[in-house]
Image (tube, rainbow, N blue to C red; front, side, top):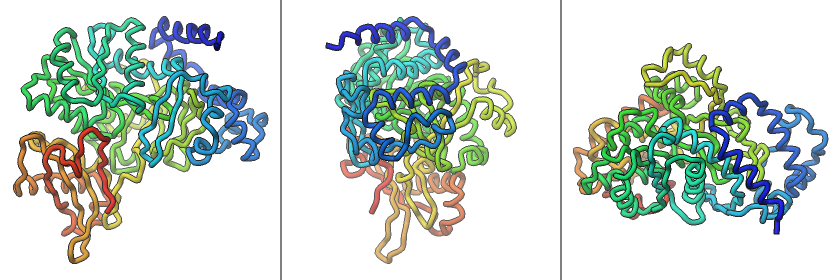
Length: 501
């Protein structure tokens, strides 16, 4: 028996339940995140055997790490050099996996799935990210709310972790009920139809393409989404602002910055940041001003832009564009290389940059002055999801915008697969397989229109495509496929937007 656990659990849970969200955030903004990161390093050295061995193998004497500058000289942790090198229990506090009471499995996007243990108390910090969304965006403290978890359940991190965090909010006093149909469209629709009328709003939480499939299927079945006051929580994929507008339009939303939010999360570190009404307003401004977006982000694609709590998750940018995070968890992470490209900005710096480039006021976006000045982090995701075509890196995010132009919403689901192919003469061309909505048939006119939209957005958003790809090669070859095509768009699995020949 671990007789000390009840006391620590009660203390952590009481602090979460009784302390208002805004008080927590303001107190943390008053603290020094660099000192906090250094303190976490010292605590990890003291209680995690694998990390001590890791430092010893690198010839590092931890007692000599006394300043933040010393901290920044520490080697990065990664899967190959740390996670796969040391047994799982030795990566946990006290060298015991039983200090954790639950396990999740990463999706294995790098090829190997990984177990990530955590304790219930580790979830409380992540639950604050959900609380930010439910309180600041959805006003769920004032409205009876049905939360419908549409992520896969089981060992995979998204579903159970999301469910648990929503349960924590309910225990804190939010009038919130959590339903867990998982990624089963017919069950999701049944939950919404039968339970939604009893609540003032219904929140669908899931992977963006899957949630869109659910909404489109519901429309085809005659569901009037407007009656349920739908809100969205997304995670797992970057999407365009055109896509957000389309989703909100289909459910009758009139508040683009408050009726949806995306979470930046990983199995390794939990939820690292979340969209806020402010970050969404900024992103929508940048979507309308691609030159400003390229200046800020350094790329032609629009990343996910979120705000984060630097005491909970401390970010650094290494090698100019790769994110590293330091975070307490079941497996503490010190300068962990999460293999995501991105960047960070302080709140004051971000607002000054935008003001200098024309964003004088947020009133046009329906926002008041933000009082909690959290910093920003943006993430593109892994660079291996691009297609190289005539030397130009083509990102899925560029093609997405082409499929989300007005007039196409009645034809396409938004899912596609792109790849560079060669024809019988050996000439290279850009092939894009596009999924049609249920009951929509393929024809040459649709192919031509869709190809033209994709080409125009590639030229607008991607300067490499505009300058590297010859004019006669810029029109993609579009293949229209039925909804749920088993080769390109199988149901129930995480969709991949690129394919290697």
